[in-house]
Amino acid sequence: MAEAEIAQKEPYAVELVEGKKYAWCTCGRSTKQPFCDGTHSDGDMTPHVFTAEKSGTAYLCGCKRTDGQPFCDGTHSNL
Image (cartoon, rainbow, N blue to C red):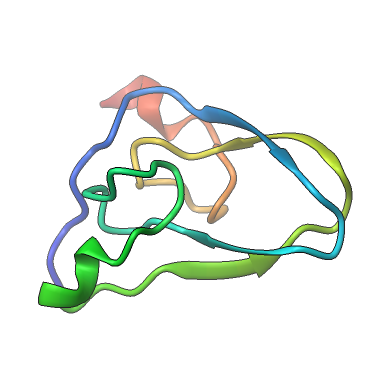
């Protein structure tokens, strides 16, 4: 599997709605970061689909290297 491109070296602060499904970009090439726009379709990566557990601000990974997909775990500070 190919390695994801780094979209940015900091998290994306986004407002999530409890119970809503989201597709977090794993390839790093989406033009709708941090969410998937289908750009990955020419490769072997797929988005990480998740349902928000609560409403409010969440910090989604921008470097695509987090161990806690889709949430930022600070990995970007080591890149």
